Image (cartoon, rainbow, N blue to C red; front, side, top):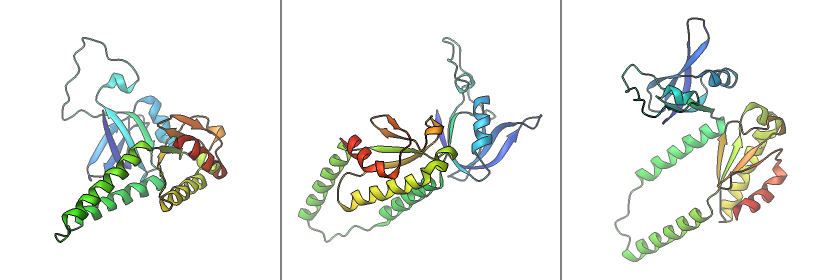
Length: 224
């Protein structure tokens, strides 16, 4: 299974004019064609517009793309240059997540261009390494992800404002040197009429009808 991320630049239609697949311009600048099984065609038509950012999980096994199990003993078809992958799942990326990905890439570039000062003494290096190890250990012990649905129904019910409130809460925790969390935009979590909806990981617990005033209580509950 592979994961593609990029922008939806063109639809692929069959002889009857119906949607059959997507052309995606990846972050590397290449153009990738992905075939869509029937269950995903409706999602693509309803949720995607040309130019939208998205993430797609793909496979070359047609049976798996339809939710079927490959038969044991059956030799899998070898990949050829003409083969096109099938989509297993696709998730439209919200503007907030697209911006976060861009910021993460920029931070990585900034770190890679930093110059090391050769005049630092060995003691300061040792202290810095020890401090980093302690921070990493704390971060790992309290690692938490908040997955917030960014589909239309949840956004209409306050999902956009809820995202901003979680960002503000994370910034406050960072300023106070307390454990922060990762905020992640995802597709439908179910219960669309009870939005906005979210899920906490690694607890794997969903919450519905969440309002900004609920944030502190939920974070304390799942932070452990």
